[in-house]
Image (tube, rainbow, N blue to C red; front, side):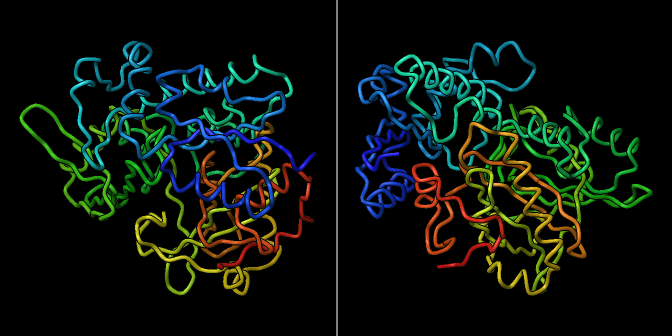
Length: 397
């Protein structure tokens, strides 16, 4: 493909992701991408068609961290959300909403609204020219935002995932499910969450006399309602009554439960991996270490090099884990790249896919064969410069 490729980037204009992608284009002597902001797109959908060319390559970025965009996406989800049994926000209340840092608004409604945005993007681009393409197709971006759907999809093709316990509608339901399955440790996750939003790691002893929840959620109660906030401060809760209330509140937003697998340790810290696949091949890998069940780096966790991991892990087990990432990414053949959260289980011989993320390629300071994530994606896309599948991993630059 020619070096004159034309990129269109749909993103929030002030996102550091935009800066990173534009720098990668400049480094490869390619023209800067045309930017279509989510704010403009949602106010004037035709603005996308105005920048497209017959052979444009469209990159859809995360719409996060912009409250005005979040409001508009929530508005688009009102009609569908009103037909379901999950928490949703009516138009007049939504219009009065103001930015409240960390507040979990209505993730199910947001997802339904973002689905509509992605459908609109796909429809416009495909109607404009059949020669236009996507780095990640909007249909598959929507799929990757539905975590229970992804885990079911992986199970169908034989990719190992934590045991799935399905959608949960209350603590009573969770309790029943755990008893039926003989489970004593579970992760409770928002079906459409990201960045450790709304996570609860819950465990109890076998006779049910001791309980503990570890969570990223701050709960604020009023006489009218319970508000949930995401927090970087990890809380431990030992009160069964408080755990019950917290789980019930989270279940209003559509969540599911899965087995809480014990993670392997490295340097005395539990860890997992964020693996960036490009063209379904593992490229950049980050080892994420934590003292808590949650390894997300924005929670001030440590990161380590793949070289350190491989000095402690059997090569056959490491390659099997990377092969699982290949297999998971191949479930989304219309997506060039994906960020996969990979659990290395205690003992470092087994693994499981925790989730897949359509926007999981913002890995600052992480290189693979001297290239950052965006440069690697562009090179594979334009020049089919896929590396041999030897899973050599990444280095921290």
